[in-house]
Image (tube, rainbow, N blue to C red; front, side):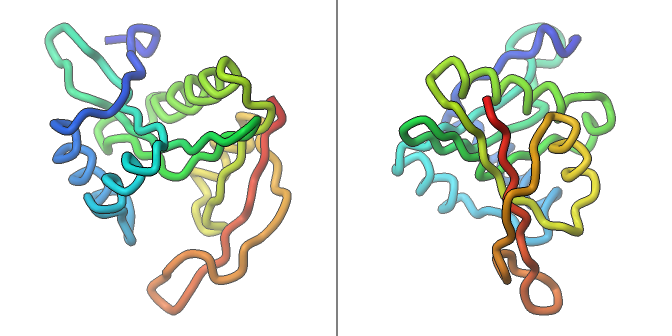
Length: 154
C-alpha cells in the first residue's frame, strides 16, 4: 500500500482493541478505552488511517479531533511502530488538516510535550507555531510536564 491509497475513516468499535494496544505501546501515559469512549460520547471525531483493502488492511495510525465553531483541536494521534519513519504521521496529519479545513475550521490547535522532539518537528514542518504554554499539563515520571500549545492558521 502507498500512502496515497490510505483511507481516513471513522473509528469503529472493533478498532478499539488495536487502537488501545497502540496507545499503550506509544505513550508513557496512554489514553484508556474509557477515554476513547468518552470522546465518542462527546461527539469528537475518532479516526483510523490505513488500508481498507488489499493484502494488509490493518490500520497504520489513528487520531482524535475535537471541532467547535471554526476551530479544530488534535487531542490524540498515534502511528504504529512498524509504520513510523515512513511519512505515515505526516500524511495522517495532512489529511486531518484537510478534513478540518473542508469542514469550516480556520485554525487548528494541539498540545505537545516539549520533550517530544519528533512530534515537535512534525508539527513545525506542517506549519504549526507555538502560541502558549500550559504549565504542568501532562503527567510525567517526575511530577508534571508543561505542554506547548501550537496553532496552525488554515
